Length: 368
Image (cartoon, rainbow, N blue to C red):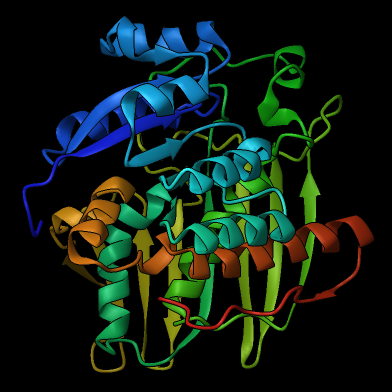
């Protein structure tokens, strides 16, 4: 980091289980200080805060009071996806930089509203895609940028977990829920942003577009599946047509195992194909496997040790604030918006049952 400033950070919303993970990250980052936490649901908030030792006098149910009394520099929003837009517009207007826990938005229109709010206030809007900080995927991006596999022509992605109600913060496991429990959760509500497609396609679409240096598909087709009694999908398959071929993106709630516990099959992560080779990049893996024209045998390459600003969205944003820069890569609003274009188009393709042209134009001055 470029200076010794201590940034004041608040966690806004505890609907997403990653709120607890963000509290852990703030605690471990020397340049950050937790000054407040907020949720209107005190039970939901306190279940995490009690477990992690967050003191009671910085717990709020009134967001205006939190802002007035603690003056945060950065807010990490871990609300339902459906609440993202309202919270970003409110926080940006108050001059507060925002990190959104994934997924980005319910719709591309919502994403554009958030981008407009941050642009108007000249604040940072960053999106936290945890997969983007995994050393295997960071290493994959470096190898692609160095030209190891030539020009990227295909990205194949499969990811998910046993389900959003099977674990809480710190990846603590819970008993598998029944259908009634699922149906009562926001994770299974279309209104608030439920479903495996919205939860996990944004990862693959955003990071995959990063691997492709900003290239977007021309059209998509998609299909989903969900258990009887649920209003959202638990599995999706998206085929994306690019100028020189097809890529696939698959999401799954209900994988055989959680990828952080064991390497399930199909493997969670990415396979990237280029004109001169391939890279297989699994979540949580200690190495990536590379084939090249010069060495067709699959060879393991140990993953890189990430720099501090590559370890999480808050560290990335703090580095930007220290150096007067803006977020880059998947956490940038520009690249995340591209991912949202793919998500919106896939949702349209599911609804119509038809192959769909890519929705939305691309922002200029993208920071990839």
